[in-house]
Image (cartoon, rainbow, N blue to C red; front, top):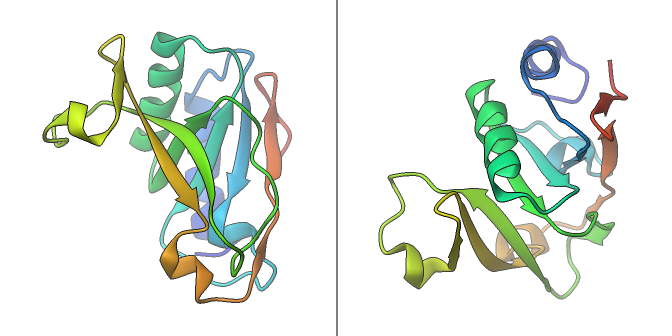
Length: 147
């Protein structure tokens, strides 16, 4: 899948028609927006906006149900990363799912809906590649900007 191809657009349209983003922002990140536009298997997105765990979990779960979305919530907007740079620690949240064993060992549970954990970006796998990832704002205050 590549940004703008038929496969991506099908998943993207489904998400934009299905999910109520309320007043949240959504950022496209990862392989789809790297400087070489390589192919990828998932759609990496970061949600930012008000810190309301129930709303965040709803949006992230709805996105996951729309296709191969790899979804996270951050308090601050994502920043441009050179994938061979030293990792920057980020506090990220994902919806709690039954497949997570020992939740309290993985991070901090909030309101029984979000799992917060610290993650170093870029990952070790990403650092082996000399790319730059520039986040793209695709939903602003609940309004889709892409499509």
